[in-house]
Image (cartoon, rainbow, N blue to C red; front, side):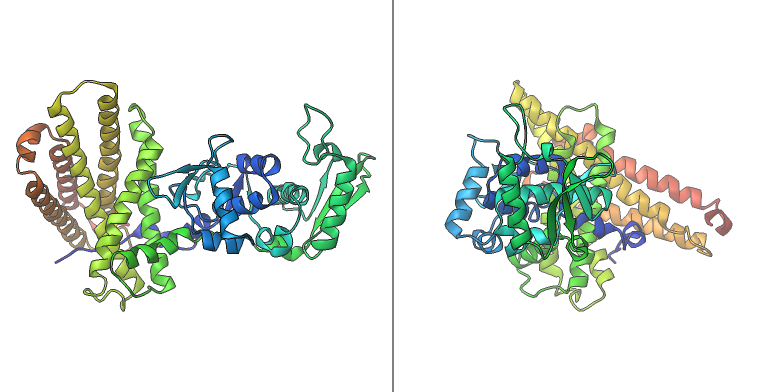
Length: 457
């Protein structure tokens, strides 16, 4: 009988887990780029692209959708993407193996956000036609003001003219002259007064002229949300053969499991600092591979298991068990690749880099899989009145489930390479990992024999 693991971590954070990830944010480097290095329509394109960024900082571009969203032609949308990915200027987009997918180089993905990083909100008015039709100078003033509003929470933002007007070669002004500033203020008040009004006023504290930007209340209450990962779930399931569309509630439950996998793999970076290589990049890459494989597997079973008609929690629990199995499979594959490279005994910087990458990935996954199992073991029974014998039984089921899953994966490995375990034998990462987990779970089961229900409260 299959054991579906309950994601207690996810349940406890149901209200806040997805609120953080759906924000579309403008970080300092994105703000600087928008204020100084883009045309008016390129500004709109950047806003569109950051809202399409996934947790791996990749953007999948649909040129027809993009042209519609930024109010331009498909041809010009393609030209903008070419410019933003050109090596002749600061490259915002980096091509990937998929011709319609690019790596977004500015800022960070929402999965990497940490408290304390300064950012500005992407307000909904950035996507309005009235905003998109403005000149780049008007957009610069409104971006600078809205970024300050995000930080301070104020509706009225004072900007010194020197911070806006270019005053020489060393200046980084956003507008070329005072005359252009006055013209731009008139433009905003004429075409964008529904969201903001701009005036030049005298400040009583400084007794100097300031540009005052006053946002309407409604303009600051609505922000753009990023649902890229949720849309990815539906698209991936369809591509893998599941033609129906999941309800919003079920898609959110799957997204929560995905976020748990990404966050937990990223959390394991700190334990492998002594390895060369980019631990963040490796963690994100492994997380995406596990999720891709797991969604492929889910698409084949979702109807047969009756999960499409069941409770959202049952679907997410089943999906989480698939993610764990795929994590173990990836772990065993990494050991296979590591041993294969070692057997070749080829020297060189490239081979050394590959070995470092594999070792780094293995240690991150190793810690992830151990934590996955042991956190569920520790969480079970820590509720009022839970009997020790029930917890012990759960731990034994957990140990048995892991053993059977590992044996299934081993059979798959042997099918493709019947000499694998002969090569890896006693020194294999995979074997050591299995032994460590079984030992830890066994020790925890034994501890339960001496516990009373009161100890668990």
